[in-house]
Length: 535
Image 1 (cartoon, rainbow, N blue to C red):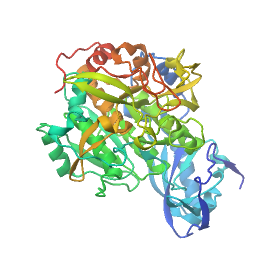
Image 2 (cartoon, helix red, strand yellow):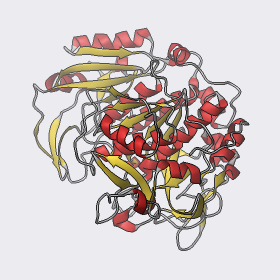
Image 3 (cartoon, rainbow, N blue to C red):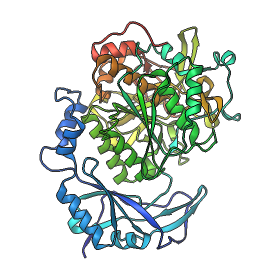
Image 4 (tube, one colour):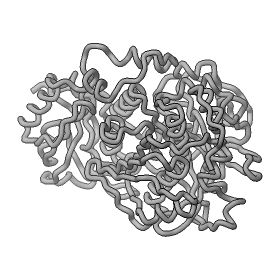
């Protein structure tokens, strides 16, 4: 049988990893197959209009999008027949998500996709992995766009930070005002418009950890929010809400995301999509949230990611297509830009940006350090506490070309202040308080604590967008082109750096366009006004 490689599927071992044995041939696993979109009216033209700021075409419903751009029945049947020929079981088909999930043994998948799955050992543990490319029969070469799940290495990391050398320092109401903020205090400082996000749904993507309802009730009661936001957990690829009891582990990420979004938009429902920390789990969680016809989130917050260099091209393309679909359906995607400065945590002496924040269809959220006097911002600069304390991610993508709304912009180098015109996508787009030394008062695993990181900025912006949507009674959706046309509605941050890049007047590769002025954004983006800030 003639075979072709799946474009962009090449895998290398993790740095420092070595194969120690063949994967158990009887081990069972599930693999997600991503299929092409249906032919006919292409999505490309619609996306080109939207990325250029033309919103005249309007948003599509999830149902219409599935009908027009989902996978075809013929393509699903072709993959189903292929699975049957190799003894694989079809677990799920989803035309809207263009996904077929197959189940089988390592031996069956080795034969079906011409791979050699092995067990790799690396400094962080072990994983089942592969090297080289995935192959499919020639008749599927134009149908299958990605094969995810053969390799189960950890794909992403959470972008939250405790205070260096002290972990997540505990707080109390009297002591916290000068060194940390509740999300509602930040909503006031950032001039969020009145409203609770009533009628909106905020989706949150999590790749580990969990929350405890009792903690959420206690936390929101401490903030004076009498009716706790409605929080629902959705299981993806056998991921689930599983609180570990470790506040410095993924529980810290989960609770931070829910509490920040829920505090600033308590009237919105929150749906948390739990998935394994693999490229398969991550993508399946995103596509499930984007195409969810039950809860229908209007904004999705993502606080996990990793350097572009750590991703396969098939994965990045699949994610980017999911974000295109979100834009077409009026769903805003907010993603943290990372907490390791301009290197994004790699030690190869080069600059890197974090993905999925680097997708041009994502609102990339960077970080600042903030101080306040009363209800006013006293000072704000790019977050950079050094190697141990973290720094805002930001820089220039090596994968995605410069979108039209960043045309004419330049990055500013630290030290020399030299300006370099953007030719590729610049990250981030916006920012918000992220430094753990001006961090967020939250509650994790029964304890009140302070957490920072760009992880907090994504749900903060998601909450603001939910409020804007509720006030305007519409979905702002793909917000990036509009923001760059209305940069005056943000607080420009001009001080500090993230390593290689300096904050400067206008857009920069540390803090983007700046931090939110919520009421100004509501007016500029929707023509709607709300007089009283959230309290």
